[in-house]
Image 1 (cartoon, rainbow over the protein chains, first blue to last red):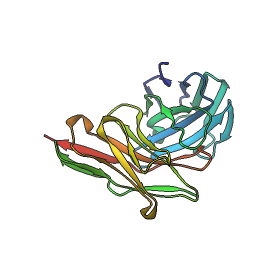
Image 2 (image 1 turned 90 degrees about the vertical axis):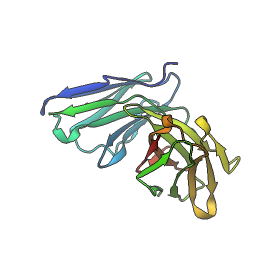
Image 3 (image 1 turned 60 degrees about the horizontal axis):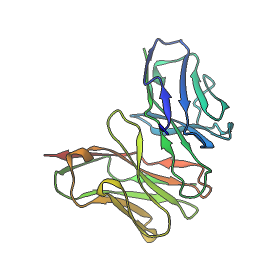
Length: 115
Length: 113
């Protein structure tokens, strides 16, 4: 397996534009996580899914952020409208049958810059 | 509730000298503990994990960590640093169900030649 695949790797957009980040989890994994990483706040969990269903979205910063998982092999994180403070690296991770000691596998991340 | 504290935001060592990255955790349950490494412009890679089978856990690239329940610590060590070890390291605790990963603030390791 190629691991967790995120696209694009880099995105530069203007304030107010819609941004869509994409993630393909490892085949067979039933949990998917979206994280945001910034210098100020470190790694923050935004939302996670189990079997394509959102379980906890309490980390989503505001209504401008939304995430979907239409099937087991694809998820999107959308920001509309984008703002400069959304600039960060966004990571997607997946894992199998969450139980004690199961690790998450991370993608390479999408570096988002909103100007 | 659970939390992780990495006591040093930056650690600098010379190549060939020992590495110690400190991590303390709090958890209401018997925790699962992990160390991840992030090289510049890369994703996070699992270094090692505590499975409760043994308190001393060996990971990749010569790293190991010791779980000390009495001290609520899970410090990461390596006997001899290599230039390629320069990266950011994250200590992570997972809740009893394994659903929520809580990350420490990270420790940036710098290795001097």
